[in-house]
Image (cartoon, rainbow, N blue to C red; front, side):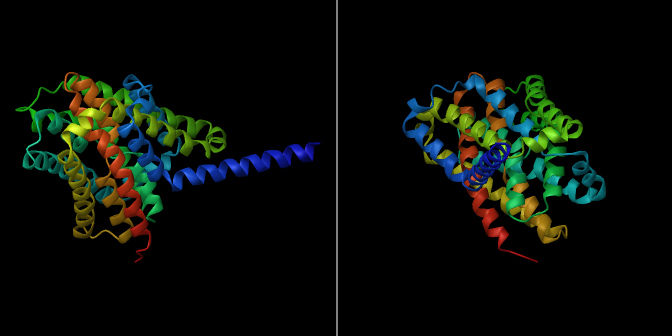
Length: 323
């Protein structure tokens, strides 16, 4: 009897691992399908409340914390120059690119505010995953993500204020508190659980991708379904702005890596780290900081869908490139 139980558990464990690998492999397709469904048939996603976005994002970032440990942060001290380059590039390249693209395309204030928020937010977990798939330097990606996220409560509101002070009113205090609650605390909690209860983290290893993808899909469903009409009304301009911002991040990130003499694996990491933003955080911040401007959530929603698709394609291309 014991043998049959063990065999059954092994079979189900193997099946669960296979499902987890499938979800990680086809995440862009799954995300695109959810976005398309809730965009063209909004009723399918209206049951997901926008009030759930912050808690869902906290789940994703808690999962990110569970995959990290203290050693990941030591890379900051081992390679301070490369990490510093990543931090400066993140908070200079993306905000200025977002503002320049928004102004060039003459986006209305709410959409410009949303695009700038996407640019001023740090990179998210997706960049770390794509760096791994691209055979890039995961340690550098995680370190830059961690430092940028830690600096976000200070730099995101300040840069947003500097860029948008003549366009919209920015509630710096609310933004600071929101980033602290939604991003920093969940990551620190996840890091602590991984440090003090590593067996729990190991046991949950296969479930993390499933939970993260499910949470991301629910966030996208909430934002897209509740803003489907606005997305259609804004049309191609917003999509063009988002795609240009994302591609500018990839290109400039890689170019900065070349200019500063980074090896290939680090150039891959920097490109993906700069180009892929924590657009879920940007969406939740738009709800908090610009409550009367529903369109401000649209750039983050569109970016959430697009950068997962483009990131997967770029990772597949990078994977084929070796030193």
